[in-house]
Length: 272
Length: 272
Image (tube, rainbow over all chains, first blue to last red; front, top):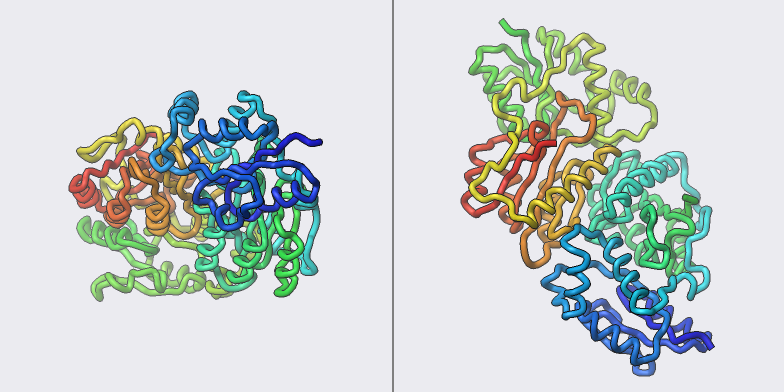
């Protein structure tokens, strides 16, 4: 029997899907839901879980051990709060003290968290190793394909997204007709999509480009799109969505592609 | 007597200041105001001028020649509209055709415009060569100085801004406590400041960092701050503003520094 899986549940539907997959496969699991990230809405009484605030690192580790968890998955994005909002416990405080006052992006922080979990004797596994078909495949997924302008916007967006990734800033860029309308930092992709819709020019619509950061640990918080992303792009009059094949998660792919096909939006997985 | 100066007037107060400086110095000038960029509000009947839409490149060049202009300054930022909004005339169409479908940032486009003006026999001069004390000097300009967190946020913001500049995206970044809250693309610095104010964490306030792009032509549209920038940062609870010394313009510096001093916001010129 597979080891008991600890699911650290961040934003979105992904943590629930991991729990469902465990249940279908008969794998034991235990959910640590981060307070206020939305898991409260889908956590059922028959799903073994505890809710902790993000700063309560010591209590979380203790609970995971007490529940016999040996493998851990970090599922769903988690934006880093300020240290004050975090209210770190003694364990989290020691962790941050060790990191020092270094400027850490989300990714740098996640890497540090994963390193810590492994030091504590847990094995950190990737969410895409637990749910089939989660990674975006290479190629166009929709019935509409990008035209010449779309392909040029994809290429430009990728170059900008990679430059940003090197300094551990966001993972998404919006390009329209060669113009970079917006770049993601901490606001999240949905806010970026809406903001750029308001900056949209006439003519062929904007393109959302999303890719992993160079050197990103593939077990941790890969860039993710889902039906909400598609719906936001449809509402904003976008031409298409390009994501890194094999390096981004497409949650709810079937529903997302169907929604895109309904309006002629294209979605393309781009090999790195 | 100095050659007649052609002032291509974009956004903000800078074009008016150039005209006033010419008048004070007895230098002849002629203003080409770009339609809808705000010059209509300050253009006085006694200022020789013409208003042209941005796409009317041929008509502008003809008028500049007819007015005996030999030197040209591009004053005030101009965000690039879509080709459709631009309605290029035959001359502008030929110009864009020569550029090709290349993805051009604002800076790439401006360089091309300057190159074209020089091909046409005009000399392109820098706005900071016409108005004294326009470049931001090195050092803290306010009575409040940045603390350790502020200095760390400046350093982080500069590294992100430079990475962005390499791909010819915006020139401004907002950092708070090591976190990049936002990155400027086409929305402009004021929109960035307001957006990041809404994403602000508790504790020490955000820092706005603005610098020139690597290899930026210093005669063209240098990053600019002014009293509006300071007012937006004050309203948004920012801790301070850091701009590249010698590579950014500070329009209305005295009023801006006074407004910052009134609330304890710091402003620092950072040597590149």
